[in-house]
Amino acid sequence: MSENYPHGPEKPLLDLSEKTKAFYAMKAQYEIRRFEQWSGQPWKEQDVNFVRFFLDRQSKVKGNTWRLLRSCVRFYLQEQGASQEARDLLEASVGIPPEQRAVSSDARKMARKQFPREALDGILDILESDDRPHGGEYDGFLAAWLRANLEVGLRPAEWEFVEARQHDDQYLVFVRNAKATHGRGNGEYRTLFVPRSVFLMVQRAIELRDRLMEFGLTWKELQHRIRIRLYTVRQDVPQARNICLYSTRHQVIADAKSAGKSPAEIAAMVGHNSEDTNRRHYGKARVGRGVSHVLGAQGSAQPGHGQGNDLASGQAPQAN
Image 1 (tube, rainbow, N blue to C red):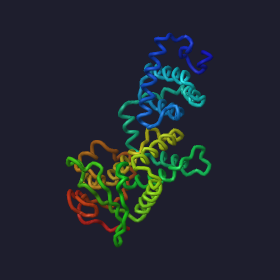
Image 2: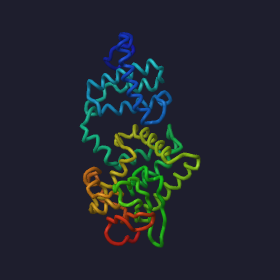
Image 3: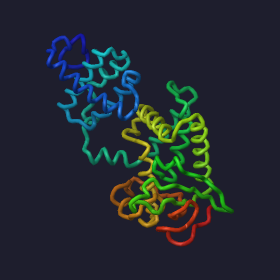
Image 4: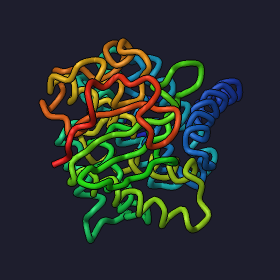
């Protein structure tokens, strides 16, 4: 083991030829571009998060290739004067047990297509802790958003145009479909009928969204920031590996399937024009919780109108 790299067999940096150094730098810069495109931030300002992002790739890359990439990044971090914390984090990754290494593509996709209760509990414990070490100003909103979207299953982008309204004894969530063009969505808008408990969750998330956007943030910028925060928090929650904002939508569809909702009802609820979309591409009934709190849904050409491609059967149910 070398003094430069006490945790593993990688070649000491001093032994690298200039040609090898150039090759290592090129490979590392490619990984850095991936991170910067994903995060929207310069890697040097977020070098620890870059290393976490890079290490998350280990499950997607096979052994020899991973060892090469790790050597490239290790070299580049030292050359560019990255923080000791970032370099130590990379060093500590050597010796990860084989069972935590490369998994199949199907397994990775399945991990993202659900949001286990244990993952939610772990994430909320961090977001709502009074003594969290790296708490962010977006933690309250992210916690409220996760709770609400695990009930209604909106596309994250749809939270830019969502309203919660009460009409007589009905609790309604109006959504502008994010994919309403070219016949892909169930009308330009959809209306969800929900119980009061879910209505209050959505209302709370909207209030916190609006409060943050008063400071001049667009929804796209706010969505990006909570995505980064979720990525950071999930590093400390083993059950949350590969979880993302969109995983909430997958879980809601899995819940609806396991609760016995028909493909037409689910399509109306999540804004799909085709019943086959949720059947083929979204969370499976086997990871559902057996309950769905969306009572009914209607698609429409205008907000608040039950017209257009109405895939839900019958009249809107009474909320309770």
